[in-house]
Length: 274
Image 1 (cartoon, one colour):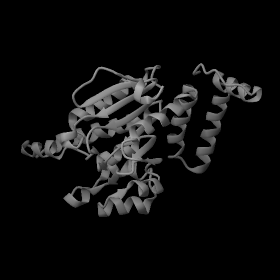
Image 2 (cartoon, rainbow, N blue to C red):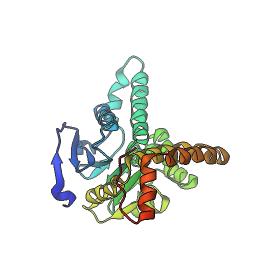
Image 3 (cartoon, helix red, strand yellow):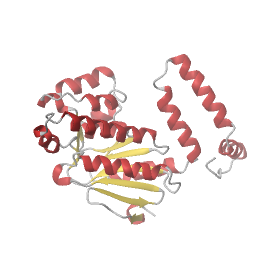
Image 4 (spheres, rainbow, N blue to C red):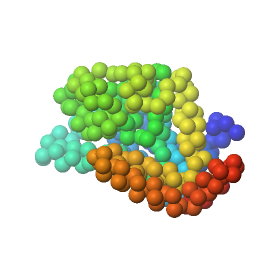
């Protein structure tokens, strides 16, 4: 059964749509008129959806998609600017939004299931950050990526955190300092996205990629994803020491014993996710 025919709508909200395609949760940004900018409400709904998915054993992977011509134009500048009239000129609100957005991005990294971005159009500033925060990304040939805050006097400092953990330093700095967009092919060459596909196919391609991972042991994927991000922040010796501990723990798992036995016995493993 194809992803097209397997879609089963779930309860939907106006700015974030959620549905299930088998064991894949699809979260769709739905503010097309606002270029799917990450408003306070959309940040909150994304974070709430990720929290809900965290312990849902029926969901084995997540796809983040968007409606309309833009994936996400970043923060909602109209919403932020409206708080300039506050007594503190918006300082407290700006801090609240930036911290809320950062927490939501970290929730993607901390989710014990893989998250795949499906990018159909422009992903700029915090929208580019959202793509970079996902574990995997599939982009349409028509997609483009930029951190153009410098053009309006607002350096993309929080997007920089995720971008610089995906893209080599000099290329990340060029994006941050010039604000110029890169096309999908360039984004793939830099490591920001995994695959580039024909326009209109990115959603199904992302679901198909997520489904490949969903076939693996959920315990193994959870353990491996956590270890990947933790070791990346360590020095070489500490990373190897930690990874050896993880491998030892993994070897003791039921699914590792089953998987190795299945490999030796030339049969398909039967996962129990433990």
